[in-house]
Amino acid sequence: MIEINNLSSFPVDKKLFTGIAKKVLKGENRNREKVSLAFVGKKEMQKLNKKFRGKNKPTDVLAFGENSKFQIPNSKLNYLGEIVICPEVVKENGKKFGADSKKEIIKVFVHGILHLLGYDHEKSLCRSQTGEAEKEAKKMEVKEQQFLSKIKI
Image (cartoon, rainbow, N blue to C red; front, side, top):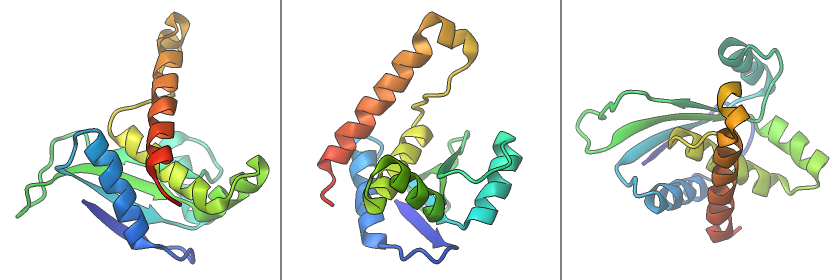
């Protein structure tokens, strides 16, 4: 269901993240999916953000979806994709918004899973003109809040 790689100094509660992944995937009727989660430092996140989004600064979370229906060998699970989180940036953002850093990291994790499941809040300008992008963003925000309200932290 979830593979966790910690490449940062952030202490990771694997049980917590596994439980969150299970709740979100089950809630979306996607029990047969596997997600990879990586925690990285600011330098690595900046490299990834520059390479894949053209932005030369670190960000809190990136989600890389697996476009094919790749099935993991010797498993009945499909690989959904990878979520990369930079705990340092999440913590900085939490301070800016007056949010608890643990809650904020859980929020960006749920956000990342929703991206892998196809929810998007960054649609093209063309769609934005029709109001569809705003509808998608609102739909994703509502889903995010629904799952966050079910997570006991």
